[in-house]
Amino acid sequence: MEHDLDALLAEQVAYYRARAGEYDEVYSEPAMRDTLVSSLPISGDVLELACGTGRWTPVLAGRARSVTAVDAAPEMIAIARDRVCGLPVEFVTADLFGWQPSRRYDTVFFGFWLSHVPPARFAQFWSTVQAALRPGGRACFIDTSDREHEIEHVLPEQPAPAARRVLRDGSEYRVIKLFWRPEELAARLAGLGWSADIRRTDDRFLAGTATRGPSPGPA
Image (cartoon, rainbow, N blue to C red; front, side):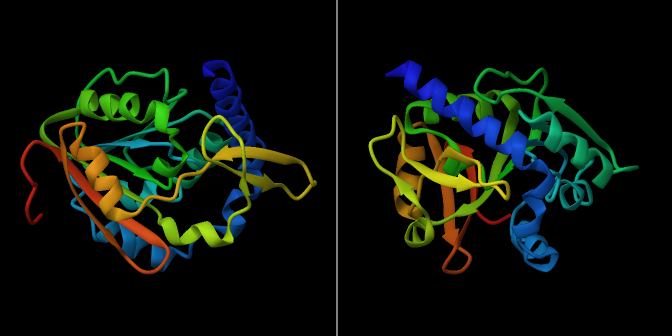
């Protein structure tokens, strides 16, 4: 039911708000982060969705004319602001399932977010991405792959695919967690009118670029 999905999405936001202070403890090393982003055609004015604590934001700002970074958790954004001090970044606190962009961008980027978008909101999310892109713009993303399934605590009988998360204080939360295979994700996007190039970067991660219409070709 829609009400149950809304409750799960609210719990996901609550988890990330509560986790802000410990989020970076298990995040990927800078070298890996830089390598992942460097493989994507990021340029111009960039919109970063679900920016979290800003682990990706300085790297994006180094390649962009400007960055607008959006996240639902003000606690995350507070940390991100400190991380990008002096860089051309504007922050917006908003729920991505209710927010609409007020302008258009050359690139829309999201790191480790697409796996937290429930199937019932997938088309809506990509409609928001489309609304944010200028003609000829690109969506670029990085995420975990289906091979992460074996190390996740997957929860049965949820309103969307979900996994358990536990904080240092022992509190438990449910978060939405999908495990996309590259070909499956590309086919789903094709059904929405996107052309996507999605590849595994190693056993754990996916990197993708998507445009409306014909294949984007080489960057």
